[in-house]
Length: 114
Image 1 (cartoon, helix red, strand yellow):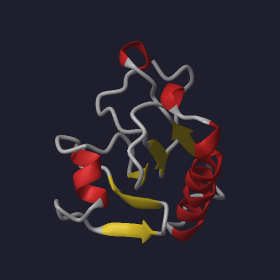
Image 2 (cartoon, helix red, strand yellow):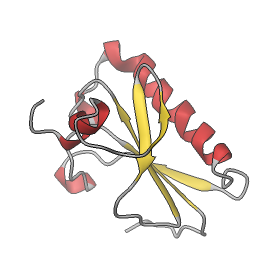
Image 3 (cartoon, one colour):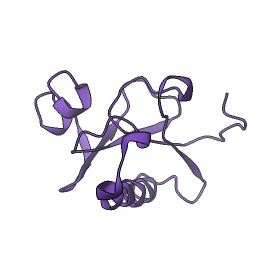
């Protein structure tokens, strides 16, 4: 996807300070953090939405969630607690149409989220 900002980050066309990079994903701090710790994890493969993921994406979806937990541990907020969020489509709050997982921590998070 030529016009996808997250594809450009994953392909190193746009610089980002990566926290984690594997064969299937990259993770970096969100530029508009909603918590003291706010990390985005994106698959290197362009998948527009969670709803658009298929059976062939099972492994990368698992990789994203396991990496989210590892990042929370590595950044020191796993024990206190954190939230993972995947927004899907317009009413779900998705603003970039490249599947991504938000990992939020560093403060008490309210429920319902809004």
